[in-house]
Length: 252
Image (cartoon, rainbow, N blue to C red; front, side, top):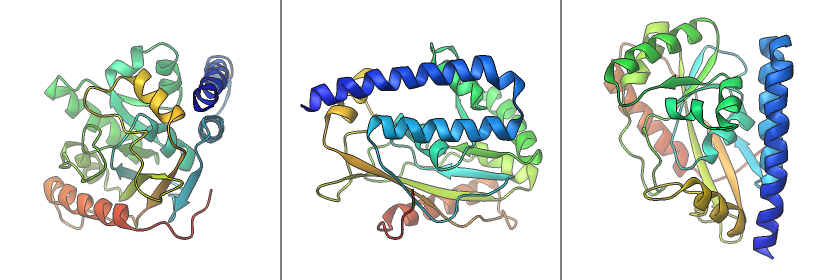
């Protein structure tokens, strides 16, 4: 039954993804920024429902920018989950731009791309991030740089935090948790680490034990004289504290 359910959800997800692709190609050129952002968030919320993944949001998502969101990174689902909680512009590896269908969806959502193998490209991306923040955008990054297994946070890379310092914008820590519905423990189903393939992770996510996703927003903070390395360490501690919090008054 789980396999049949997973196949049905994948089929519906493909239809929904194609509908999003058509919206971006045909309608986004005629829409203003606020309408596009609202459409992206609504599309992400609908996709989570299609996949059968309940979303619970804790704390206060930013109503307006500029703000830089920093979050732990667990799964290919993370971007979808954060878009559903609050539309934001992500920084993602440049390979995503060339992926069929997904690349169009990511670009339409306002993604900023970085070529990780080129150290100088980080400076270019930081510059564009700072520009976006100065324009009042909400930008999101995963400072760990890769997905973890959820047991502990990886070190936070400080380079992208420089954008908030340059733009004099606040940074808001965010914690993601995938929780098994039956046991209440962290779910390993949606993790995307090591030698996992996207297809294998997708199947394990949808055919495995049901889980819910919790997004917890912390309090925004300013640099207050900290350099990017010290601020990155402090933000890591803030995300760790949020991650350790137990679900309470959730919405969504």
